[in-house]
Amino acid sequence: MKMKPAKLNFVKSNLDYSRLGLVFLATGIAMLTTVYLQYQKVNEQINTLVVQSEKLSHKKPVKNTRSNANLTDGIKRQFVLQNQIQQNLTIPWPALLQALEDTKSDTIRLSDINPNVTARTLSIAGQAPQLEDVLAYVKVLSQQANLSNASLRDHQVIKTEANANVKFEIEATWNQP
Image (tube, rainbow, N blue to C red; front, side, top):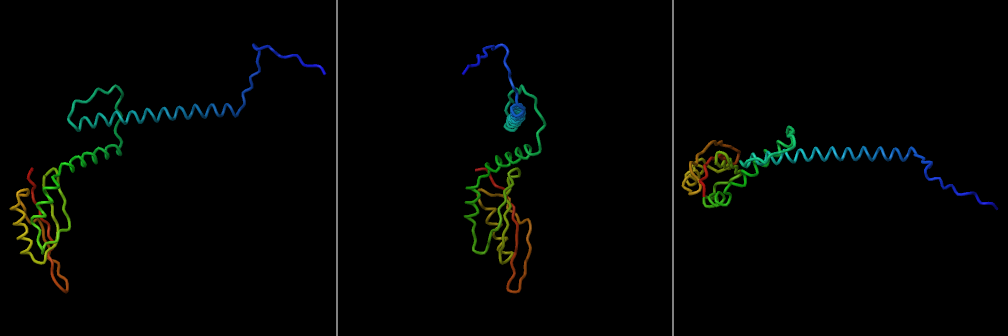
């Protein structure tokens, strides 16, 4: 049995490129490009959010070396919600709830308490058996230290077969603690 001589010519090599290998290479390059473009987009949004956050907190903005793209509607909504949350955190809930607790009445049933941070008002809704009970409650609320300018904004008498109730809405301004 005769052996074949070894082919030791390394300069002349036969490289076979398979189609499957080329497809994998092209797919990898496309995926790498997509990931890089996503990274650039997210980085741009982060920079824009940082600038907007600094504007909201009234600080001098850091110079942004990258271009600022227009904010999308979703990002704008996030800023509005963030601003509302920051404002809601400034509501003196313990003092307001204590004032309402101090003025509780057996005849008054509160159903809704809505603060307005910008106007510093508190809207209180509820029901009572008689209008006189509501007016007495408004008077007691206006005498609280944490609340002022309490007034009856709206009322409606609801009559049923058995009895009549007064549905009311009171507005009061809260004082800074």
